[in-house]
Length: 157
Ligand code: SF4
Image (cartoon, rainbow, N blue to C red; front, side):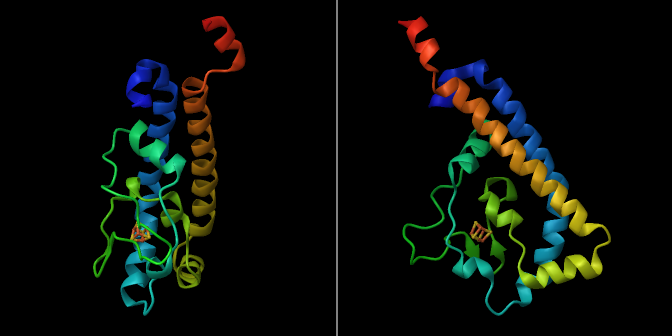
């Protein structure tokens, strides 16, 4: 509702969200390769035990980039496992998963990254840094519009 009400004022935040989605697209093949080679044969995939959820920046990214949010949070309590985990893996598109679901690399994947993918660790570190910075910038751009400063409140009154 806040995003809809703000209209064009949030265009700077939307532009940052688009840059994040673009970085996700660039990084997605690498992450898909790693998970495709390891998660299917793993006896205890990390998603079974992960205690993660969509945080504020994840939700901002989904809404500011015009994607449809998942129908619910990943789980209702700390005991439940993620509702989007199936025998075929995660059913959420990468762009609407929690950011931690993308950047977390298990030890087996890290070994694969070092051994089999030339330049992989460097690319991964660069993407991680870029996306983390852009997420901060997106949140700041949103809050600048959504939460007026004291000065602008006084002006408005
Ligand atoms: S959203 Fe997908 S990647 Fe994240 S914990 Fe759930 S199943 Fe795993």
